[in-house]
Image (cartoon, rainbow, N blue to C red; front, side, top):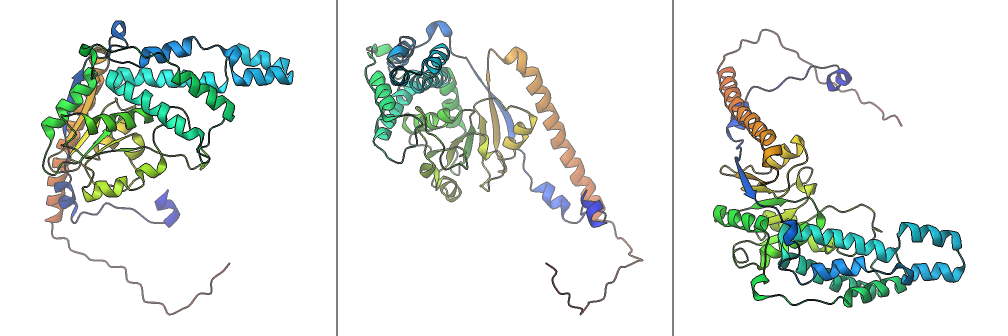
Length: 363
C-alpha cells in the first residue's frame, strides 16, 4: 500500500542492522505452576465472602426502592418486567459485587477478598456524600444498598484461617522474591481491574514483599468523563496519574496492570514480566514478552494444574516457536554482518537539482 501510494520501493536497510539485532535482548521463558481454588473449601480464611453471598441470595426485591417507586407510581407493566428480570440497581450491584469478590477469593485468597470487600464498602459509603461521584441510581437506592452491606453478620475467624492466601498468590510471591535484583523493574499482567488494585495492595503489605518492591496499580480508562462508578471499583484516574513517570524514574519498580500496558504506551523496558492470567492469544503473548527487554530478563506465565493437560502442549509449542525465532535472529545477524562487509560498486546515481521554485499553498 505504501509503495503504491508513493510510487516507490521499500527496502530494509543493511547498515547497522546487525547492531540492532545484537542489542535486542530476549527474555528467558519460565512457567509458574499453581493449584487452583478447591470449591469444597470455598470461603475458608475469609470473614466476609460467605456473609456477602448470603446477603445477595436473601435479598428481598419487593423491598427494593425502585420497585416501591414503580408501585407507588402505578407503573404496573414496567413493575412486572422488572420483577421478572430482577434487574434493579441494588440487585445488579450486589450480583456483580458477589461475582467479583468470588473471583478475588479464588485468585488471591481469604485475606485479599476481605480487604476488597471492606475497602469497597468504605469507598461506596464515602461516595454517597460525594457530589462528584457519578452513580446511576437515586440517593435512596444507594442508602438502601449501603444498609444491606453494613447489616451483614460477620462470622469470627479461627486462628488457623487468619491471613489465608491462595496458592496462586503464594507462588507469585515466591517467584518475585527469587528474581529480585538491585535494579529490578517488573510488570504483572492480570485480566480484571479489581484484581489489579487488590494484588498491588497485597504485595505492598505482605511481609515477604512489602520492603522489597514499590508497587502500583495501572488500568485503562474510558475517554468518557461521565463513566459510571460501580460498587467494587477501587481505582481512580487521579491515583495513577504519575505512575508511569515514577516507574521510569525508579520510584516504583513493580506495576500490576491490565492489558493496557501491552502496547501503545511509552514506558521503560522491564527485567521481569509475569502473566498472572494466561494471555488471550499469541499476539498478547508476544506483546507482553516485548516489555521484558533488559539484557537479563524473565518472562513468566502462571499455569493452573487443572489446565496443564489442555493448555500445556499449546504453550510448549509456542515456546518452541519463540526459541526458533531467537535462533533465527542470530542467523539474520550473521547474514546482516556478511552483507555489511561487502564492498559494493555504485555505477548509477540519481541526482536531483535543487529547485528555487516557490509554490503557493492551495486550500
